Image (cartoon, helix red, strand yellow):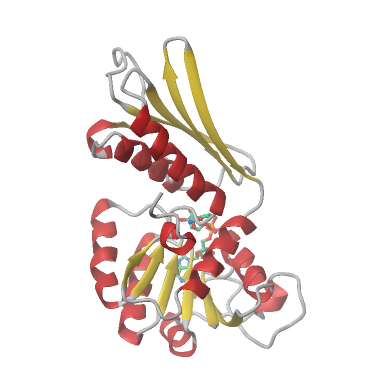
Length: 268
Ligand code: NAD
């Protein structure tokens, strides 16, 4: 399968180049960067400290879609939406790991996916998707005497908060309680805000250093507390999931899929 990496000079972009090169059945065919980036015109192999591959980083996503079977995009929401439209236009696959979509942008992605095979997940690691399934299960068993809090920490460069993964875990908890997350979520606390409302799902965000991604979901009651934790220590876990999703997409129908479809954990 010919794979192109959009945003290939980013932290995830570079990890994705390595992962595609190291995955049997995947062929690195192209990569793009923003037109104002130093990486424009650089060889994709040299960009990640490997031998030159003879493939230069371009800035034309449409040209990338023309020569690839699937594009992998970990960039920014506006750009990912534009790429979803290109995937639909050219009948190609988009694997998207970008986070920070607004509700309206997520709706737009769903709409575009009626005309393209799109796999989107706020976290593409196998471990986090397993954690998501566990959180839903635990939340469905425990009642509202158990306060749910989602705590996350990421490196100092991360721009969105709470992380897409924290929101995904919050959604799993809300789903377990059969409540829409936006009705029970508290994404920030400051000042004299009063006692914690029963049934609230709280989020706390830490930023610092080079933390790749730590997430804990707590179920805190009087007398006991359950904590489910995932810690990513290497970005390759996300890239592995993304390349696995691209290979899985072969022969799939149009529509919006997630990692549970790829890993076949959707029935859990
Ligand atoms: P980053 O800032 O290092 O990389 C983003 C790259 O996108 C930059 O190099 C930027 O130049 C590029 N870009 C932006 N607009 C572009 C355009 N129009 N054309 C080409 N390139 C463009 O960030 P990162 O840490 O690599 O994370 C990127 C995104 O992936 C974030 O939304 C992050 O939250 C998300 N992420 C998701 C997962 C997951 O498993 N789903 C894992 C890690 C990060």
